[in-house]
Length: 490
Image (spheres, rainbow, N blue to C red):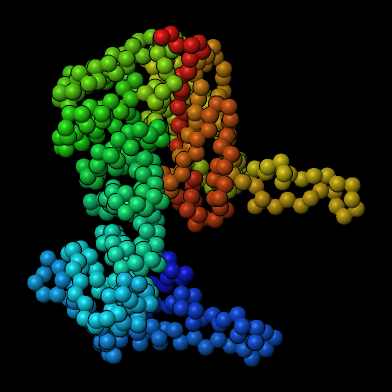
């Protein structure tokens, strides 16, 4: 069946319970049948009897019948595939194919019968593809996105190509048995789609814990794995969880020693407690196999935990990624906060975190106060008194305010010397029945709030995509960052 394309971007959402061949789609603006040209509109201006006669659905039905019955066909496409001895034959119309595809226009210019060779996965979708050329819409499933994009790219059907790419970007959170985001990322790299590539990479980073436990983790390429390990915005329970997943990946893939060592050196060992590091040294077969490649990092991690951060910073450069926490969900790094009816009142909460990742700071706690306001007004929108007769103050509407989140330490301490705090706020949303991270806001010690926090969220609507059962689901993470007070000795 077909779906509306608008100006060429298709939402590609299947409609359950409908036949894939009997239905018709409303081209609307795509064909221009429901909107008269400007010149005609000008002729009708001021005429109360003006009306638009729209028979686009009937036209769509006729076009689909042309494809199904082959009436008036002047060209034949024979699609061959290694999966079948018999070609699929389509009786088509050169004009309609040429309007949509410059490739078909060239192929059919001097011949009426064309044989096409397609891999099994694209050959299976060729009928859907041809139907799109007739009615301007198509319905697809997750596993069909890549082969449909391949067909659109091969035959230069740019509207369909953009539509499928948009479908992929908006369906990253959809649940599938084998997973699909990793495969889509690898495909985006192959075809050079930078926007899709970045969307997939960000989704994987913000929802890494869900990916680590899925079947698609084993299909992660070396290049993708190294890209993820470089990032400090990975959202997962702990660095130990990441090491365990990497160990499993290495055990299954068995890459060459230089690759395995490069992967293992990307783990941030100082973020793992000494007791867990001792256990890994004693029990990890992967670590035992490549101990020589990471021995210096393990030794440095034990030194980091044994000394005070200020003393350690005198001799080692702590301003590097090895000593920078990722977005850990463990309780010692932050707290969940579910705000019910967030459009109603200001709310506040408090929680405690460990001062820093070093074992020297394990027993030290920092208390944090958090204030949430759903309708805070910037200075530019606050009421201003006036001497004019018309009124004393400018009118201010509730909807002029914007959500605000302020995070401040409830205490100060000499222990804070050499430590700054990066705050990260994760916003959870429900997509395709799963709670996933869709937004992450980060700000540093010099600021108590994120300037653009939920700037585009409409919390007044119960159906807002930012709400789950009319509640705002936040996870606040405090990332202590050590820095040197004096120059590191060489």
